[in-house]
Amino acid sequence: MVEREKQRVSDSERQAAVERLRLAHDEGRLNLDEYDTRLAAAYASVTYGDLDRLFDDLPATGLAQVVPGRPAGATSQAVRRRPAPASDAGMPVALKILWTLWGCAVAINLTVWFLVSLSAGEPQYFWPMWMAVPGVVLFGATVGVANVRRNRRSGGELPG
Image (cartoon, rainbow, N blue to C red; front, side, top):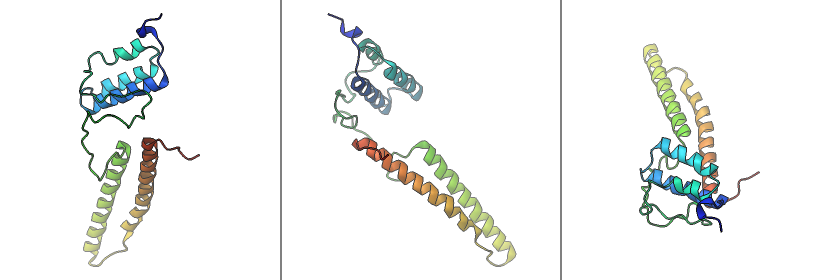
């Protein structure tokens, strides 16, 4: 009989390992570089030995136990997660950056419009309203990303 370390792992076992690594990162046990390196190794793992090496320095307790075959979001209550702020709960970093840039651009445009109107002595054409166009596009992208993420978390099928 082949030793457990030399037996091949399944996709669901790799996914369970990835979920366990994510939980370790969320708990602050792994920094981003360590998490990224171990994540790549988890997806590249072939045997149980490959997977087991990823957790040598991580405690078995304290981490939510991830059972292969159970959906990734269905972890035990062993880990209490901090709720994200409602305003940007789960929003990708790229969208946060885009919203920040858009907000800064709107603020600059309103300031310039206000100063031009003030110096002219009367309100000028309100050209900052055109900043609403990229705002609407950004809002649509944010809603679309949120829906895709919600579908993935609930195990729903993606359209198309």
